[in-house]
Image (cartoon, rainbow, N blue to C red; front, side, top):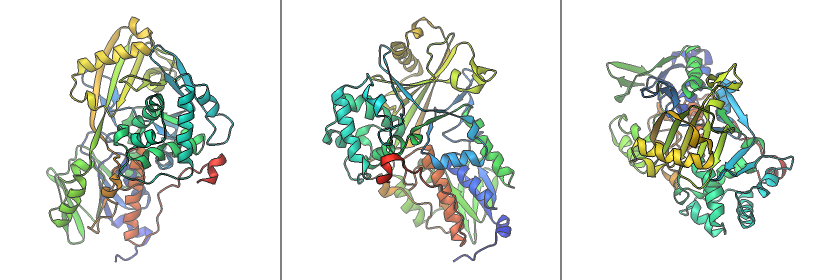
Length: 475
């Protein structure tokens, strides 16, 4: 058992965090705040991992690798933003607009009614759903109110059908929300995690379902986290791919090209499909690698389009019944695309998102753009008259792990069989699916596990958002 060390002695203990995505960034920020000497290594030339942005060579524009949003229930992600001073770079929305081909809109928004009935008035008048659809959806939500379902071999699509959901309810409600939230098809999704998304974000309170959208490029948003670490005596090294990790008596040696980093502890916050390549040799690594081999990934495709004129008055929208699922009007959302921070500049820059985009992985860029333009014009007629100035497609093949039924059985904990190596990542055992909130929770859990190994009582994890209204009876 390690001896407890005083806070003033923590700076003598070095921690190397591998990976500057949200998991590594949150672990690094927490440990730097706790007084440890942190070195953060990132193989890319920018911060953020899968939640990052860069200057696209084909367009000359700064683009996000994929649109990321958060919800009011993401308490740990919000804590991270507060920690490094980025909370003011999130714009919040209380309503969702669902658009059908042809342009008809339905808006879901909260009312003064207590949870879980706060969205009921707008839900009941939503034109995109029929009366039978709404009755079916209400019945399924009632089944979720008291507790989360057990994680069995049943997938969520089967659960929906077993609970009498209509085809329209599945396609225009459950599918559009959950495929976007979990990045996986309903017939490959854990019932428990699907239900968790709805309970935490749509049912527990009105505040839990608020949607936040960054107003700056993602790397700009998360670079503040790197600054947070360096201001507390840490070091951030970009373009530092890890080649190998070796255990030495009392420390860990991490080799990155011609450089090596020797530290007392290491937090490995990398995607599951790259972790196995850097583990130290031995039986422990073989056992962990067998668990990693059970994971599957699901892709996300972002389609970026720049038009010579405004194509819609909406800032974002859920798009129904087509391949493209979301429209984010970036020229209205991003501060750098506005004049004096409020009035949109001329033209429209939009990002279209296709989650679980398995059908597009092998499609060439031109075909994807042609499909997107055709479908987008069905929702917003102005597209047909607008000139496409430039465009690009970004495919994130390993966007998230697939939250398959019973996938929790092979998600590893932060603590490993190595006393000085800890794991972080949205794919670890966080109790949440593959989300930004899950990634931050994993980083905080790894930081807590490290400090606890030194008999410290540091706490970084933030409690869930409490339920309100009638949902307090079931919280």
